[in-house]
Length: 117
Length: 107
Image (cartoon, each protein chain N blue to C red):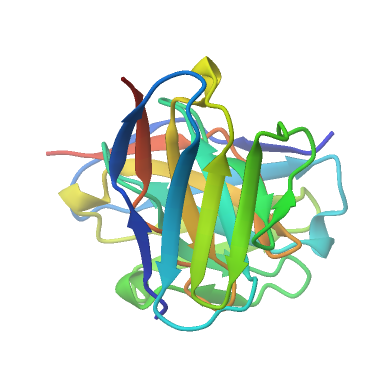
């Protein structure tokens, strides 16, 4: 069965970077785009960007353009999202999400990234 | 960017009620449109894709309609497990924008 398993919760100081991982299993990793979506406490869903696991091509939201980097490792079927220059308003639950038939059909469990001094 | 405007932002309803949530896109998106359900502390769950296709395993009391700019999610008879927040999303272009959410609460 399809599973997206994310790394554990993180606590970071303002200005630091965080790199989170998402390991996929149960399907052919390179067939489906992977996206990152975040949700600040009590808020809605915010799309961050996407990566094509086949060739590594990415597309990110303009809001985070200079601070977010998405990569993948096809040998381990893992995608990574690194967010730099963290601010308090980056505190959120971060989800990796598989896209199939132009919808987000499988979601990781989500990880809480807390930015606090 | 395509803006998604969802309404209402919250509603109170009773078990057995028929519930309708609407979502409007700022430009035509054909049927590149999806609905998700999220319960507290959980990841969102895909309910309907391509505007009207029920995801496997989703109860038939959920239905979706619309194309272009206006879309609707209908729950024909609200069940206790349906109390949650619902989000719409366009998949026509990047950024893949979401609506602000509709919280369905118990009356």
